[in-house]
Image 1 (cartoon, rainbow, N blue to C red):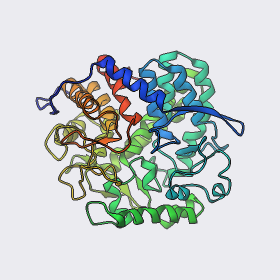
Image 2: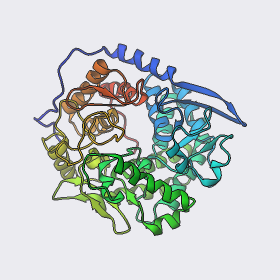
Image 3: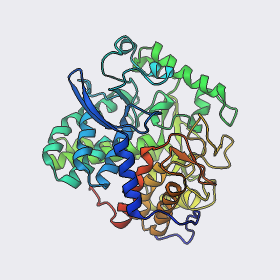
Image 4: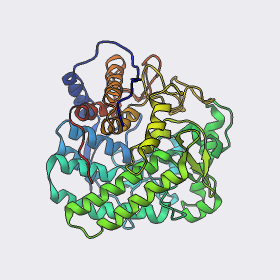
Length: 443
């Protein structure tokens, strides 16, 4: 795939130097870092932001690993992952939030994301009943690549194997290779517009009614006591998210690589699972007419034809044909089909009915998040789109220069919104490293 002659456009303004950015990211991470011991557990993690998100979140911790290792902090990253898996259940499950220092959930609605029995034991460390995108294998591999600490791989591999097998057994309801989420909060993109039809919201821009529609999903799961088979049978919110499953497929492949490194006999199992999932993503999610990968809803895998920024995530999978990758990228990310803004990548196409670029309780419905640029940069570099990858990096550098490390940004003005000192935006240091030296292939 050759470099496009249609580079992504960003604003043009002086930016912080790379070293200034690194220094500021390090400062934000250490400001948000917390460690201690509670009820026999040692914990060490970074809060995504000081006040808004005080807990240890699953995929946030993995993002922190990428950022810490980009700063040369492999030992600190190792402690983060060990903390993330400290309360892992015997069956392999790890919740999307771990409550350590502050044991009471931050919002009343978070109570609905706990097992009912855990509501009665909030005086002890506990986890939520939900999951998040399974980036953990990639995080462990990143730590190994920087530290060459094979003992750490040996320590974590049994935990990782149990975790990914739990996902395969409990969330691949149809055994097709695709995982289902049971709440909008499990994708990490809480109010994602493609979920609107599933929760019965058809009013476009978000409002209080959407809040209650989503709250009803978590209330339903809570009343079902998070019995996954009962929840699946009820079909209230069963969604196969394109980004979630892309990340799952990537991490299954990484699991095979970790098994190979550790001399573990289950390498073939994870490699087969990775192929199965990647093929299912292509078979079920891809729409040739729209050149897009859509989220799926319900038992019948109904395509949710709303153009969020995850419609092009699966192009990173090796099994997706080059001509399909080219069509998706040229039409959407590199073209002018709803994602062509001064500060890419918007979380929703600008011509979608629900698009809202401004600050709101209902996030992921228009503003730009650094994680999209970070995720797509890997693909652009591997496929020869060096100019476009540089443009995504330049956009992030301009955003943090202008507005600081914020939760999300206006895709037209670059104004920063949401939480301050938000660690996700620190992924810019990993982007800086990748632009200079792309990551090696794991296969």
